[in-house]
Amino acid sequence: MSKHKLLKGFSKLSRDEKINQLLTHLNGSKTLETNLKSYLHVSNQALFDDISENTVSNYYLPFSLAPNFLINNKLHILPMVIEESSVVAAASKAASFWALNGGFKTQVINTFKNGQLFFTWIGDLNKLINQQVELEALLRKSCADITQNMVKRGGGIKSFTLSTVDNMPTTHQLLVTFETADSMGANFINTCLEQMTPVLIDYINSREALTQKGKANSVMAILSNYTPDCLVECSVECPIVALAPYAGVYTPQVFANRFATAVNIAINNTHRAVTHNKGIFNGIDALVLATGNDFRAIEAGAQAYAARDGQYRSLTSISLVNNTFKYTLQVPLALGTVGGLTNSHPLAKAALEILQNPTANELMQIVAAAGMANNFSAVASLVTTGIQKGHMKLHLSNILTSLNASETEKTLAVNHFSDKMVSFSTVQAFVNTLRVV
Ligand code: MEV
Image 1 (cartoon, rainbow, N blue to C red):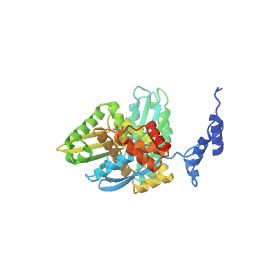
Image 2 (tube, helix red, strand yellow; image 1 turned 60 degrees about the vertical axis):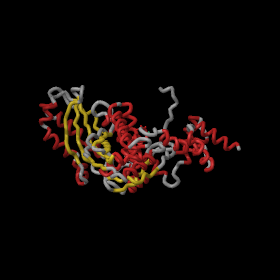
Image 3 (tube, rainbow, N blue to C red; image 1 turned 180 degrees about the horizontal axis):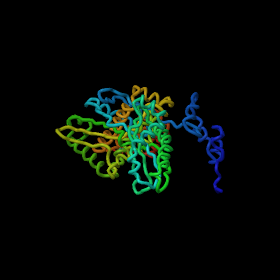
Image 4 (tube, helix red, strand yellow; image 1 turned 90 degrees about the horizontal axis):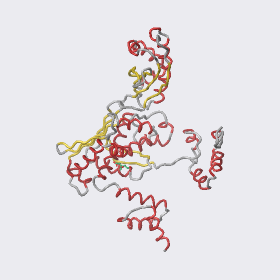
């Protein structure tokens, strides 16, 4: 028996009943109730209720546009959903700069995704591997009904690899590699794996030569969010002299050297690499979220990729050769443009429409360009003015909005804080002085 008072049957309650229970439970304020209720959608709430469970309100984030992204000679306007001020401004600024300097050059390196089927078995895995051709045929047949459609769309099952899990001699993995066309493929992969599981286990257990030491048992089957072979590359390149608009007080060459040092620090120093890559994900996540893709999957896969050689490193690399600045990002991005939220959320659909309904391959390239743009802006600021200058402008604007400042108050505050430290208390004190008069 729990000594805590648990909420029973919560999911069965209506929205109002849930909110009432919450308020009773917390002794919550009227403001909490008003806030929750005022962000319900006036005409289409059922759609959002269907996306999750126990929904009592909607959580709004700004849906912004970053124009002027020239990617492989095609101009794009990027939809970005993000809570951090300055990300969209930084992306737009870098996009405009690179549009005048050759744009972002992107290419998809490969698009394989993996699923894992784990089983325990005290047996000689090589014996099973020797029979892999026969086993594979059976495994493919077991999910032919699902793969048929995927094959028509250019996807399907690519390969099977049997191995033993490190440090676990009686636990084995069947790694299945898939192509999932324009879908992210989670449902497709998981369904295939679950259909294959009994076939694999029966295959082993029905053969005397394979069960001399014992029977096989399945453990689990699930796609892997580690997608090192679903990789996209984005690079920007210009003569070093063309970097003048970003160089601040430095010459373009000194700026380029400082930029390269910053990137090399991020390649070699994990504390810095994490922050550096976070700047890349400012752009990536904003698009992943806008297009209704699974940002947790993208983050988990790409962060693991950043540590693929055993040390977490920058996802970008740099070269300064022949007076040319070349900056490259490689990142795994298992994205979809069909299925899941991409089909059901009106704003995810809007985002895809703004991107001119890309294929999954095209979306990978656009998203990589967004990551590159944000990271380029961040590193350029860091090695010149520092990041706070730009941040503070937006920080001030956010504080003024939260204080319900009038347009006149805003103008006076922007002037006043042009050469002063911005903090909530200093801005509040300043606005209060204006209001006293
Ligand atoms: C802030 O959201 C992102 C940065 O910290 C990235 C970086 O340090 O490169 C500015």
